[in-house]
Image 1 (cartoon, rainbow, N blue to C red):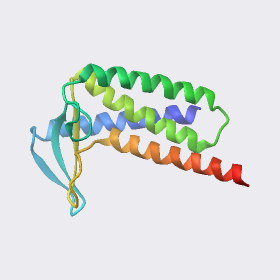
Image 2: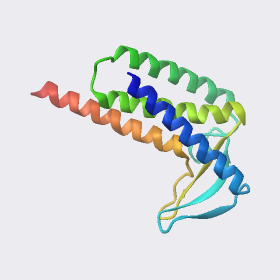
Image 3: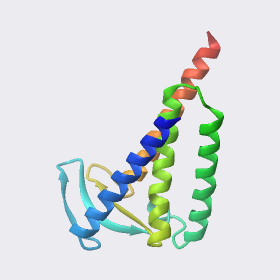
Image 4: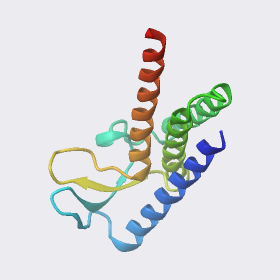
Length: 151
């Protein structure tokens, strides 16, 4: 279980460091090169979810995120001695959720900065990447468990 909390801590720290760097380096709606043909850095404030969905619903997002954090901690306790991939998944999910929660509580919005150059996609941040990877890991664990049951 300690692995999940180490991952959580690392995600939160990296997320907040990158967000602080973006705020210090770029004015709002300003961009700078990232990896050519992959992404650039573009400083925005997101008051909603992806594509700004439900913008202005700060307290709804805070309450939902707090409920998710409590549930993930419950799952961590419940799934002790499970596959390490569970801990990786839960650590990524918890770190991503708390990273964005910190912004919502402290600032009232989430700082996003990664803008894909090869497709139209919402601008995102490190916490969002962690959440996505956490879901992928969790699906992987569930797939492995299903395969184990079939045998």
